[in-house]
Image (cartoon, rainbow, N blue to C red):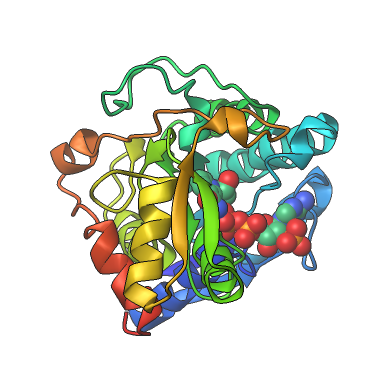
Length: 280
Ligand SMILES: NC(=O)c1ccc[n+]([C@@H]2O[C@H](COP(=O)([O-])OP(=O)(O)OC[C@H]3O[C@@H](n4cnc5c(N)ncnc54)[C@H](OP(=O)(O)O)[C@@H]3O)[C@@H](O)[C@H]2O)c1
């Protein structure tokens, strides 16, 4: 199948391109150098020229804190840009997947969020991603929304890389312990996304590696698995001020994923081990 992947230079997009190729699909990876999503004419023309049979839309404005001070740009990329992609897919009658986020929830309670739970984003980034979901489903009603969380993978700038660097430089790191969610390994999510492209069941899904932890627990596991003697000191979100508010409860329920017959992702500990030791 001819699959077009936006955001192909990003950490998830590149994993999706690799997985599509591995399975013998024709993967067309595009990024901001090919066309800017916010330009509807350029987006429409590029998609029409590529003639994909399916689109996996990974491109996004992902600078969560910066979005608080440039909301227009974040809305333009995440909401308008997604609408441009979805309008093409809807009109061409092809399927698409839009990648969304745990940040569409306000993070109240401690139960895993189900897909039909009302979203209530706390940040500009979360609001723009939610608008992207709505735009995608409006223009492409047979589309698929996949909300994920805490992504890490080869070539990306992410928490695991930061912890490995700090772990080598310092004796101790202070890490937030009151935000709980699931780390997600980009190649594991990529496998699911290609499964979905091959057998699309429209709707909203939650997909992250299995199991929940706090950022501090994740950091402690990274240090231990990498053999770094760095101490992890748990702190609260209040002690680590950031421009954008994050949900305290980012647990995503896999029930809808399982009900549609898709495989759950492996545990986050298993994924971390494969990332650290270079096996897929
Ligand atoms: N990372 C996470 O923890 C996380 C968690 C939940 C959900 N998600 C979602 O997962 C998806 C993939 O995230 P990621 O971590 O792979 O992000 P990423 O590494 O930042 O990749 C996003 C890609 O989109 C490109 N892009 C940005 N603006 C664009 C525009 N106007 N036109 C075309 N391309 C543009 C970026 O190019 P530049 O780098 O040149 O800007 C980048 O290559 C996104 O939808 C994100 O919202 C991510």
